[in-house]
Image 1 (cartoon, rainbow, N blue to C red):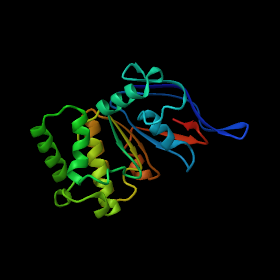
Image 2: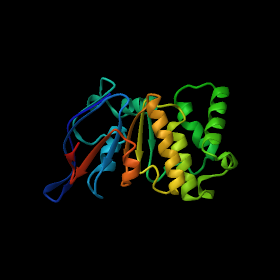
Image 3: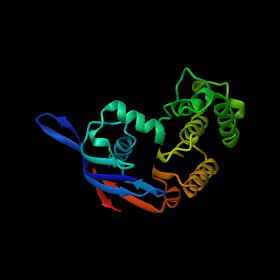
Length: 221
């Protein structure tokens, strides 16, 4: 599903370069559940953003579902992202001017799902994540944990082929965190490929493979 060859990401610093990622070569098969770990500043979130096609400023080769992402323009990358990828952001990235229900509807609108079916899927997600009572509230009216639940619900609502999750349980109680991880496990068993970033050893163990990053390099796979 995913093939990375010599992916590098750097920022100019004075006359030199500061590398966030160095020579990342990696294959992820369809149906894998991968955990990325490492200290702060190791490049974990940067790698996730490249995989999610949210960052186009990097060197190397990236193929997704057999398509050369490194040769695509921003519009083509955005289209591929909308069709196949669900992303759980560390900072939620919910749209402040939309209600919870409207935020959940966004990924479905990208995939040409009919209105009636969209309403049913949103209702199902609200129920599944126990946030029915929050459906007409705006993100600013929710706690951090509630926003996290909405962000996870939005990422998985359209059954994406690839789920990318950046500290998906970071603001949740341990019982809620376990529920989210059990959901990811179920989605993975149903065929979704999952790549998560976490510092939590218990949540990391849900994955079938752990990749450790350090100073932008893959230290262990």
